Length: 396
Image (cartoon, rainbow, N blue to C red; front, side, top):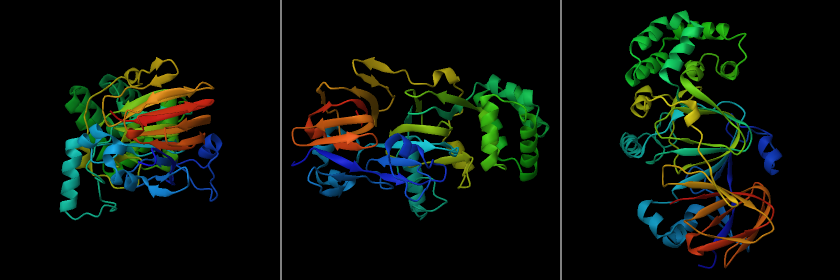
């Protein structure tokens, strides 16, 4: 191959929950139309393919580049295990809450995708649950203070919160949950909240907002903020049911498949299996398929103090281990010393801060904050030098 490293020109997604200033503040990225800039996609997912640029300025879509030489670019092991680049790397910047959602595990994603294809549901249809046949475990790494919900609270905690607020419209549901404090009881309680008829739901939301009016804790501030955009959404009860997690910059959190979660505010790096499958549970005007949602949700509590990923520091690198092989993620601190790394797979390196020069035996690029490169597995090694910080995405 003539080249083994390419600079990436990445797709920016202008979802309405995105921020208008964070990407320009952090990475000097232009926003000429003053639109919400929610995500930068780095990878080869069909919904947002990066463009690979050679040192002499030639351009090709990353998926086309990989298709020309899959084994050399992805590596022999990756080609055996995956049909394409197995991860999608993003910068995510949220000003408003994203929808409460779960992602399917692999076998259910394959079945759901095939079923919806068989039914003739267009891939871009609003009624479509499965955009691809893949699972979507993911990791979020905070660049700024980052607020999220992830996983069900311990059952006793959920019951305590609802008991404290004493929302009369929900008494029957809460009492039934008190009598059945199991995963099954949690499933029935969550289902009951989601299917409240409109009149009861409106009454319960009114009671909720009245009860928390003078409460200032983060949990209740989150609900109040959600209510501005989604005043009639049963998702307003979700912070009482799900863990509310505050990540400090440089902290990370893994989100398992089949676990309800939502990002609420902040900017971070997100890496995931290459999928865009989302099953929504609230805080959205989009399609909600409750049956499919519950078929893809694991009803099991996890304490909030078990959610953050324990970082492993070694010399100038920080690794954030994940329990999947589709992707891996680490932070590299760079300085004036030239350092060398072996390629583990096809890799994407994103410059978080500073200006860093990256070289393979065939190509050299200098990238600054907000820029990224793609390195083929066949490069075997790359070097880096310059003051700054890199995020490294790859797979096992």
